Length: 170
Image (tube, rainbow, N blue to C red):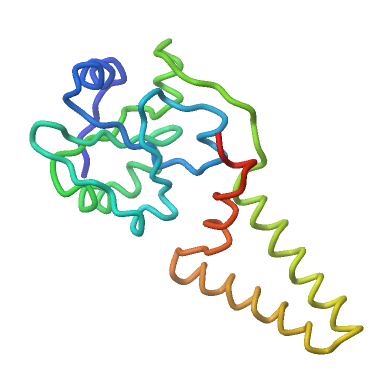
């Protein structure tokens, strides 16, 4: 279990260069509100991005929106940190509520909704295209298999693709 650190104490460590801040929120959340200097490592793909390990001199402070995700995945985050790590008490909401610096951006459609729209559109395209050319039905089967794979493994290729789109970049 990760120990908690207050936003004020976290900011002090960040300003001194004695900690790193890693934000585990998804790209759409990061686009709306970002903590200055935070490294983006969305929880949905954090296992695969090769997080640089923490050191005794520079521990990692993990944050999410409210602190719930970092609490729920505390063991995984501790393991991935590879060294000393904390969770930001109350997440970015608490940080902003304390009046600490934040960068606000435009609000994009949440990633989960983008995935729903993309997958649903591809399934519909496959079904309608199947009326013209029966081979198009395989598109629907492929998307369905991808959704099952994402649900079982926690890895969503469509989410990675959508995260790279210009509207999900700051």
